[in-house]
Length: 306
Length: 226
Image 1 (cartoon, rainbow over the protein chains, first blue to last red):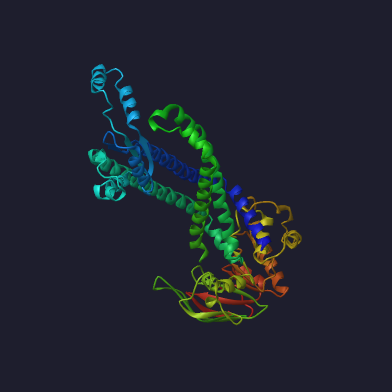
Image 2 (cartoon, each protein chain N blue to C red; image 1 turned 90 degrees about the vertical axis):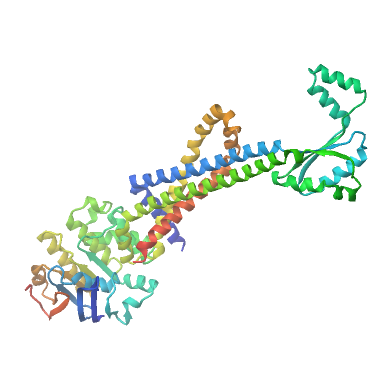
């Protein structure tokens, strides 16, 4: 058993080494496939980063009537925090709201003068709610309906909730994000399938060249595994070499992208690549090995069954 | 040892290559199958290797119906047969040593056995000086001798030589036939297909003559009349 395995592995390496140009052509194609896969991984990360940035800009603010006590607001805050949809609920006191208002209108003297005229703080406290997903704001807005608030004793304290003003924009953004994610996944899937088909056909061609030898091996009494094994190892070698080459290619590439397109991408792709190097390498390496071995397995089947 | 019972092979519905063949080959025999190109010689030996299947009839190797064997049993059967082809069919990316070692590995021989037997068999076919050469670095005669070495290395019960001299000059032809004769003298059954009358005359053994897919003669000591 162990001797058989040793012979299969040795056979795979010898076949690869002696196949010369044909083997390197297969490595080249697998490298292109894995490069596409790496590109898709990076594209997905840029897409997710951009979508997260956009999602982060969406929130719902609950404005309270001036003079509502902090305790009452606190009760509502705690209720909101218990909602599974709520990621973060931030309290802004009336004083804090005034300070921010003044800062924002530091150069607007007429507004500041008007504020002085009033004499007291016209602004109420507010709660800023961030949901885990953009689609969950509606659930939070529903929670803030009068009958719900009545049950926790927080009725008649809310002046307005800006969700209703922003509903259209939030809904539209939500559908854009969902669409972008679906499109990204679909493009990834299609490109990955195309790349896998191209690889499969290239490996099929390399095995087609050896079809007569496969027949001879069977006629001299070699078992199916004895014939198939070295081809599987050869396929795995294509995958390993292609994975290493792909990772090396993306080092200068992501560095260049990072230097020249950081503003456009929004993400420091070089840092992302380096910090996730081993995760990406693991995906690419296993992808390469699986692709190489499965392609060899399927391609050789036809000639083995003779 | 080998029994053909009413074997017929028809390609594409109407091309009859073997027509109701009944033939028995005993253990230890040297049988030459002769006939013009297209007579059905190669198809006949392919049936023994299960490299092709009959349209009708059965082929037995001892008590085994060859075409009803399961994959593993067929592999085991093939290990009892050595094959030599006209076009050599050597493994092109393996050296002479590795070509023979591969056949030994297939039957589960150890590395030590391989290391000791391969040089010996190469010496037997006068190829010691080619041990680390690839097939493309050898002449036609050397390739065929290597193919014979591979065929006999596992001491098979049967050697099938399908037109082994077809691509060789007279000197190499004589050498190859002499080696096959020697193998037969040692007790191995040999089936040789050829269309070379000189080979038949030289051998002076049983000759089965085929024409248009039929066995038309079966002589104990045939002559090369074609």
